[in-house]
Amino acid sequence: MGALRAAQFEYDNRMPPAVSEVADAESTWIDDGIAELMARRDVVFQRRMRPKQGVTYERFAQAVDEFVMGQLGLNGISNSVLGRLVLAARCKVTSDAAAAADEIMSVANPESALEEIARQLLTPFAKEGVLAQAEEAQ
Image (cartoon, rainbow, N blue to C red; front, side):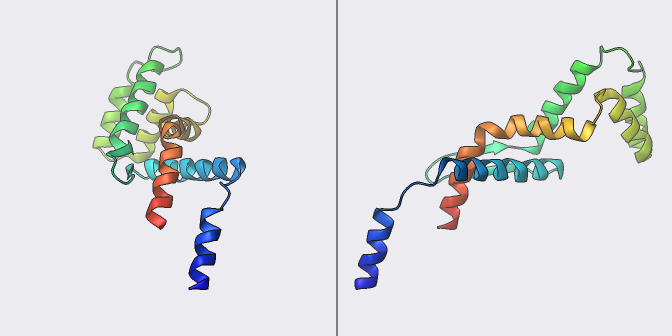
């Protein structure tokens, strides 16, 4: 019984984690979420007694679409880039599809741009996502 009291005392008097530990946990959660979205998987979680929340792959694709549509009017992008992208994808010519996708994104590092889009979508959910992970671990 003494061990139970000692454990309860330790639990009751536990200090909250340092701010840097929380920030690190949130950064890790975001980085893991970026990897999931880039692998075409949803990043959805549910806390106890609350509705599901997070970012689905569909929402990520929509954000990428919005980004790309904003890039279409820029100089240096061919008028046929969307058509070439569709044709390359339909013909399963992945190198041509990747080249057209890179052209339409019109950024120095398309992979980093996609990761940044994912990061912007995930950041508002980081705190709740970390809490949901902690709840699952208990």
